[in-house]
Image (cartoon, rainbow, N blue to C red; front, side, top):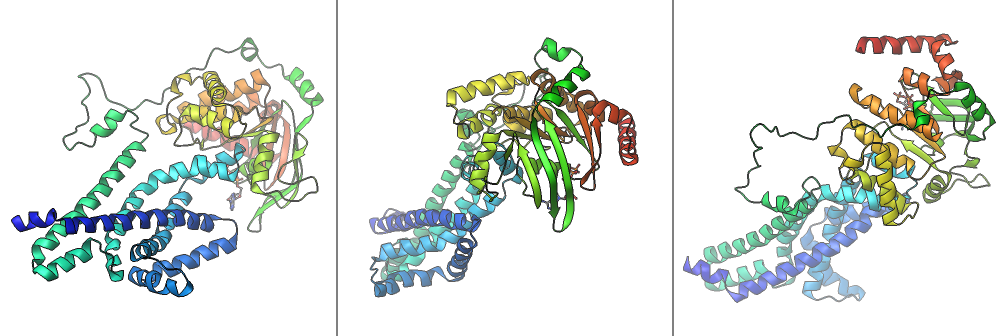
Length: 533
Ligand SMILES: Nc1ncnc2c1ncn2[C@@H]1O[C@H](COP(=O)(O)OP(=O)(O)OP(=O)(O)O)[C@@H](O)[C@H]1O
């Protein structure tokens, strides 16, 4: 025991730790920088960059670190790069770590839900802004455990630097043991030193994970959970501990305009006199040779509310996604307020960045079936963030507008809640508020209630109804809510096999459909809702 304590505190071994730490820190830092570059190359649109990154990964993951250390120390001087043993070890470790870290970064980035990127795109965010503001923060949270593992493995791999005579902990332990023949005490002491270093990495990892844990915002609660004797507080007798229930939260009182029944005739006259908001001509779109939209023509006028109906797979979502260019199409033109999205005045395709800018300038809002709120941001940040990054509104003004919109959809009290702490209906109301924030000329709603529990559908439909009646917003809604479409939409369109089978004033068409396919579809929908009731 005395011998063990003697070696644990011996300066010769303690200085060895310094070299171990130095090589690990510089190796990891260099590996992280190169890993970020390699991951960026692999995710890039340019194939040559992705191929280069793959070849690099094959070489440096496929050869032993010990050979790479020898190469950096002995072979690089032949081409004029002379490094000290410590520098060569740091470089070799960095080169070796880079492809592993790149794969951790890439894996977690592609693991972020595609809907998050679609929402960023729909809001007019450029690919780089979407990556920095939406994808990377979410990916980083999930990559921390794997990075912690990589740090421990780099610490252990640093012992291979002994092959180029770096005086790190393993080499010094071996030298000391050879001189004293005290193998057990020395290697036991050196093992303990490695454990302390690995333990430090584990503690750093836990602290980072806790700091990034959005579910426990109070710092006291975050650190208390670390203590081994920590127990969750027991709620007082009679008080049930429960998650925030997904309750109906009422909207603000209706304006007299919204409360008044819609004067259909007056509305139809006003719409007929207004300019086109969306003009679609001969739109063709296919996936892998299967035609989804087959030469579709459609004009939606400013202030008009159009309900898009059709069986599953008839192309409703595809049509909406084409309108704001989330989806490219084969031929035909789409103009929104007279402007083509995605091509310049000579018809040439624009870059993703220019398309994003055009989307923001034209103003097409989109509400998705699965809400697609940014999962790492509160309701307020979800609305204020895009306003700051895309419309360049000041932080204070963006926050004010976000609060105002949340008030309008009856969710002022949930401004600081994360999406996962809200009910589906509340999330969709925030998503509608977010889409409205930049004042879009047209709002596209892709089955906004189909992912909701039946009791939450009405609160979302009521928000949409008010937007149509109070604000006169131009809307294209893909929906299966027939009675809502009848009440709120000016026109209904029935889509099947990539074409418009029937269209007409919503109330008339949905009460007395002319086409047998529309009739059959409405009958099925009616039977379904009767069964549900
Ligand atoms: N990215 C894609 N790749 C291949 N096929 C796709 C893709 N997106 C949609 N499709 C196909 O295109 C067709 C139309 O899909 P779309 O989602 O537009 O229909 P929909 O009318 O909105 O259906 P639903 O009411 O079920 O949402 C479907 O057959 C679907 O499988």
